Amino acid sequence: MPTDPICKMTVQSDSQYSTEYDGKTYYFCCPLCKAKFDEMKKGTIRLKRSLKDHERISFGKLRKEIIKPGICTLCGACAATCDSISIEGNQPKLVDKCTACGVCYNQCPRTITTEEGLIGKIRHAYSSRTLIKDLKGQDGAVVTSMLAYALDEGLIDCAVVTTKSEDEPWKPVPTVATTYDELVQSAGSIYSHSMTMEGMMDAIKQGMRSIAFVGTACNIDAVTKMQKSPYGFLHLFMRANILKMGLFCMDTFYHEGIKEFVESKNMKLNDIEAMKIRKGQFEFQTHEEVKVFPLTEFDQYRSSSCKFCTDLTAENADISFGGVGTPNGRTTVLARSGMGYEIFNEAVDNGYIESRVLEKQEMEKVLNLSMMKKVQMYGLNKRK
Image 1 (cartoon, rainbow, N blue to C red):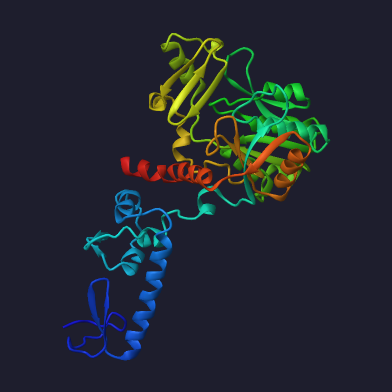
Image 2 (cartoon, one colour):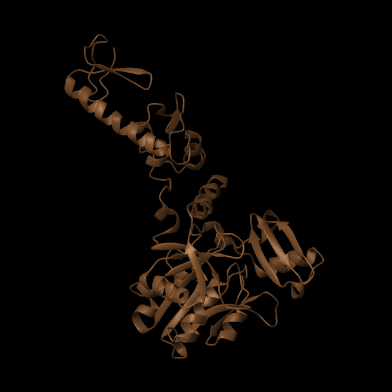
């Protein structure tokens, strides 16, 4: 005998209260239960229709990212919202045809489905490039341009940035920059950890009180904790205003590892003029050519801490910058705090930077890579 899906009472199969939904017939004990069911299913239909405008997501995606790695909470949200899913053997299982409506994936508490969940809170997103003549930097050289404007206008006393060591090629060294020439020396990316906190403390010891701090998510998080923790150093002992400028970061590599790899390819670090990671490739530019290698060849040199990081876009920064999303020669900019938003747009208004609104398909690229970074911990847990 059938069971009323609302009150769970057993009812007769010839009950006058029944309804068809998704190829199945449901029976009810009374018109009230039938009305509740019909209203709930109308809402489900509306949700499925709205999700059709977005990516098609099947149960297989939920199984791959959440169930197989063992992070399913067994809350039953997927089974409760889809008749094709049941909880069997202490895990969700597909028991009927999947229509890839995405409802199960979007209800799961362990999936990340919102823009804020992937890249943090933002005010506006832009695609930008420098307007400073002859300035060369990574992507659109926007970080250096914004710092140049802030220094010129007296908005900051200095900028804590990273430069290359004079003694060891491509080894990152934190620097307190107070002039445009010093900023230019820091342009471009170095794919190794930099002890930028040391540079920030040096700036404070020198009496700097308005400081622009440039770093990846882990560096930005350190500053944030020093500012906000009850025992944070900046919170307790210092009076410094910090403009946190975050850099997109998927991976960093040990400096010794990069050196070893370069030398194994009959190159010298001294001859490398620029490095860039793009589309799964590691590019090394010399005066004569650009040599490209699969990023997978660098797995053994990857910094161990990066395996545990899930923040691509430096979510705790005042403003974030990266090469993901926009075309070559431009920078994706995510303005977050009021201070970051205002200084960036002032730099645009004063001719240091050219900027436009980030397009939808460009933002999708940022979100997709952010998702990869967020779920990498699931893969790590699975391997263990």
